[in-house]
Amino acid sequence: MLAPERIAELDAFLVELNHASAEVILPLFRADHGLVDKGGAAGFDPVTEADKGAEAAIRRLISARYPDHGVIGEEYGEDRPDAEFVWVLDPVDGTRAFIAGLPLWTTLISLRHQGDPTLSSIGQPYLGEIFIGHAGGSRLIDRAGERPIQVRPCPLLTDAVIHTTDPNQYFNPAELGAWNQVRAAAKLARTGCDAYGYAMVAMGKMDLAIEGVCCKAWDIEVAQPLIEGAGGVATNWRGESIGRTGGQLVVAGDRACLDEALVALRRSAK
Image (cartoon, rainbow, N blue to C red; front, side, top):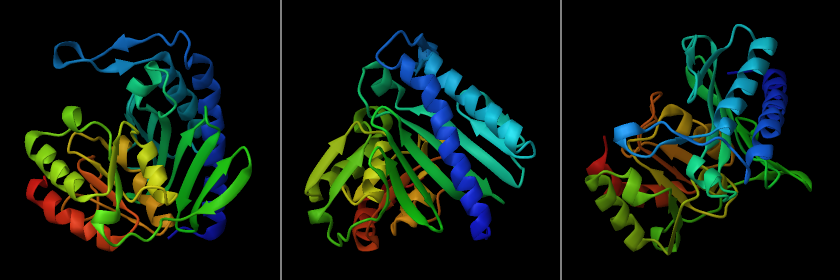
């Protein structure tokens, strides 16, 4: 368990990292972003100069401030992944939204301490938002200042607003069947928000966010500190702790609502 003063120091650094990445990304949003398809025969998998430039900027700051820390990033791989502190980065989560001009992409930064996600942020610089979470609580920093955020009570799935990114693209057939069962029970389902959906659960605007086995560590690790700091829960589809290599994820504001959704999700758990 990190001391409060250490958490405060790392929290301030998280804000600094978000500002540094935003300086790289924002001039390229709705502009010439240098799109490249890295998917090849496997299908469209976009990457832009914003993805690469932002991760490089974040890595430079980490190396200068904390040279003993490790880094795992989507664009440039692993550097000392077994260090005591390891930063996990997705500089532009939702690149498809980014290239479509939609302001629902985010910058995801989480920090593992001794292997456990401890501190995280979801930044949306076009909207001027940084969501930060850790054991001391979760909060939103925006143009109006900053304020605490928390999940909302929603014990019944029939009252829930739920989210996934793209069920037809990112779920395998078994996962799609489980999603459709949960969706049929829920009050309202939305798609296309990527990790911004996690932030909306933490803020009490949504109740569940569900993602499939194709997710990588940098896609999902931010969810745990942010959601738990806001009073919610993040698990895999078995209701267990999320893994450190990615995989299925469900985040919920209310444990009772999660338990209802897990009745369907467990059947397709990996």
